[in-house]
Amino acid sequence: MTKRTRTLLGSLAAAAMISLVPMSGANADGYWQCVPFARLMSGIQIFGDARTWWSQAAGKYDTGSAPKIGSVLSFKPTARMNLGHVAFVSQVLTDRVIQVTHANWSVIEGDRGQIEKDVTVVDVSPNGDWTQVKVWYDPIRDLGTTVYPTNGFIYQDAQAMKIAMATSKIAMAQNAVVSAAKSAANQVAASVRASPLDIITQAADSTDRIAALIEAATGGASPPSDPNNKPTAPR
Image 1 (cartoon, helix red, strand yellow):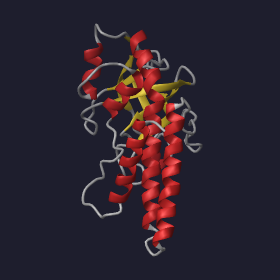
Image 2 (cartoon, one colour):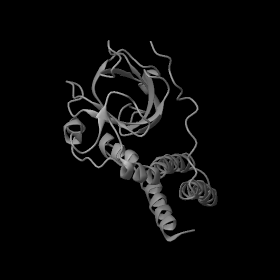
Image 3 (spheres, rainbow, N blue to C red):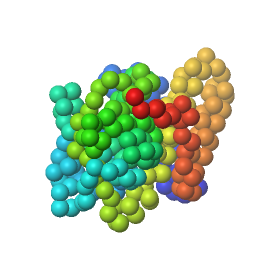
Image 4 (cartoon, one colour):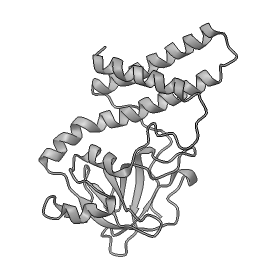
């Protein structure tokens, strides 16, 4: 096991035990904003609020209205989403249906800042130019009725593609690791009446599962995707 893996395991073990203690406010572990996640996944080096990405891309990256795998879909700000949003295009299913992998969109199990992999986005613009979309929203398990205005797609250059290929699997693996750590903490919390030996055994088993996730990531394997998060037919 590498030094980096051992260090990460130690941090996760500490986080799992700390999470047993009641805390006020939101738990920051595993909280992702859409901008750093889209930048990490795509390799597109734009910084600042999501609403500024489209203007910043001018003259630096190619942009357009055709979806491409590896591009970033730029959402315009709205009254309810005043900072805008950016999402990494992970699949192109048809010219009107894509899937994105993005962060901090749905509220999942009461928490924001979650990563959602391969969720459906449908172009509902009158001219089919991806200026208006509907997006899968996990709490209702559907696309919903909200129509979001978008600017279009920001495309990767060769360097951005290289960066994205080197980091996207690790990003998804890290999210899976955090989920495993939370699960381990919940299991330990549920066993407070067990003997100390039982608690130690459960913690060791959880650490082994986390280690397997990390080794899979560093070995180039992707974490398993959510089988329930399937494309939704356009409406």
